[in-house]
Every structure is written in C-alpha cells, then in structure tokens.
Length: 344
Ligand SMILES: [Fe+2]
Ligand SMILES: [Fe+2]
Picture 1: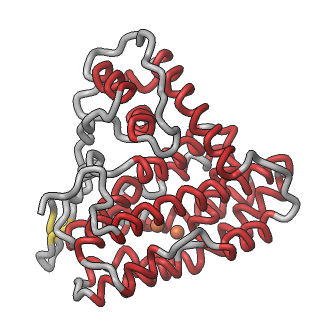
Picture 2 (picture 1 turned 135 degrees about the vertical axis):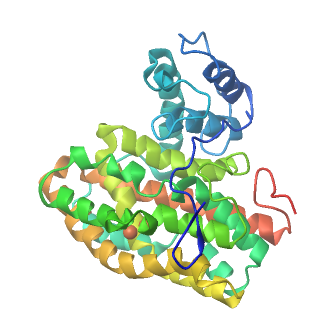
C-alpha cells in the first residue's frame, strides 16, 4: 500500500507474484504438483475430460500455464515458462479450447466488411444485460462479487493485447499503441487502468493484490481471460486478438457508464467509480480507433486474416454472454456467483 499527498490509500504497484490457486481436478492437480518442483520433463498428464470452456479443471489448468507468461507464480521456477513438455500439455488444452470455441461460434470464415461486421455483431447484443442489472438493482455484495470476477483480467488489463504490437505494422500498430498508451496511464503508473481497478477493489473493501481471488472465480470467468491469453500468445491468432480488442473497446462506454451509476446509487466513493468513469471517456475515443484504424486497417492490410478478426469478435461476445448469464443466473437464484464465495 502507498499513500498520496492527500493521505489517500492507494494500492501497491509492486504486487508480489500470485500464489498458486487450489487445484480443481486431475489436470490442474497434476500441474500444481509439478510446478512446485524444480523444472523437469513432465510425464504423461491425465486426460482432460472437462468441458473445455466451462469445466473448472480445464479452465484452471490452462490459466496455470498462461500465468507463467505474465508474472508467474510465487515459489514456481521461472524456467517452467518454456519447458517443452509443459508447452505440449498447454497445446493439448488449447486445442480442446479452440475446438470448443469453433463449436460455439463457428470457425473463421471470410469477411469482406470487417467494420460493418463488428457493428452488426454488437448491435445483435450478447444476452441479458449484466450492466443494466448492476446499474438498477445490484446490491453492494453483488458488485463486490462482480469486481472479484473481473479482477482476474482487470489487474492485468491491456497486457495480453500488447502482445499484438510486434506483430502489426503501419496504421493498425500506431492505433494499438495509442490505445495502449491510455490503458497504461500515459506514463503515470497510478493512472494505469489496472491501478484504477485496484483502487475500485480497495474501495469495495476487497484485496487489490494481483491474483488474490483466483481461488474464488469460476471457469466461466477464467475462460474470459484464457481466451485473451491464447489469442495474445499466438501470432497465428493476431487477427482474432485485434477483433477481440475492437469489441472490447466498442462495447465499453454503455456498460461502464452503468457500472458507475450503479456504484453511485449505492453511495460509493469517487475512488470506487473512477475506473469506470475513466473508461467512459477513454473508450469513446478508443472504440473509433479500434474499429476503423486497428481492425478495419488490419483487414485492409491483410485481407487474408479478416475472418480471424471476425472470429475473435464472436469469441469475446460468446464468452461474455456466458459470463453474464452465469452471474445473473446465480444472483437470480439467490446464491453466490463465485466458485468459492467471499467470507461474509
Ligand atoms: Fe482500460
Ligand atoms: Fe480502452
């Protein structure tokens, strides 16, 4: 924790590595048991039989592999990141993940008007409105759960999309740099969107440390992060990563306005809403840049991957729809939406 001149508590920007979360089945147990040892060649891993998108064991196993490429895990040797046998296991999990996604949203198919496609896709919506619910009806406990879910991504906000930078050129690359510049606070570490989200967590009386709630979030949430990590780590999927980011930016202003209103309705402080308020302003600009110059520009520069851009857009819409349905379904049944509920 650090303090501003005004004495306001702000989250630490030097978070330690996260702790390995508890395993949730045979594959995540196998990985957990291996990662706590010195790097070595993995023996045969148990077959993953979980639903590749919604199974807790499969989702956590993939997340365990991916986090090695971000901050790593406390007590886990960094050399594991490029251990070939671990990468082979990751690949088998990714193959199942991608096949499951193809099943849900269809594989990439040619797309001649990417910008129009993105607008149409967004216009069709993605199921029930989580943001509308939180604006009008959500309780403070539900907002706290929502923040816990989102902490899995928003404390590493923008990082996976940055993997596209060395893989783009010309106007799409410049557009992505402009977007990421804002995401990273234009040089002020306290204004990084991940830092603003840590402030929101603090204001909601939650732990702002990176990875603090990984043991609490269900597969449907881990999958939203695994999707970005997968698209980000594979140059082959750079078009899909761009499509993912374009929808992310284009779908931001309305929901973030709603989250801010919901928190104010509940009497929360400006520290709680700043993350959402900043997005309303920033993404009014980002949504245009992302659609026209980033996604549209990439489609014009590389027409052969236009279908991948559209696929990435469909993939985020589908995973976000499942996420929203899960939270609203749990709350509608008056139970926690978390894998492991927060202590009262
Ligand atoms: Fe952001
Ligand atoms: Fe943005």
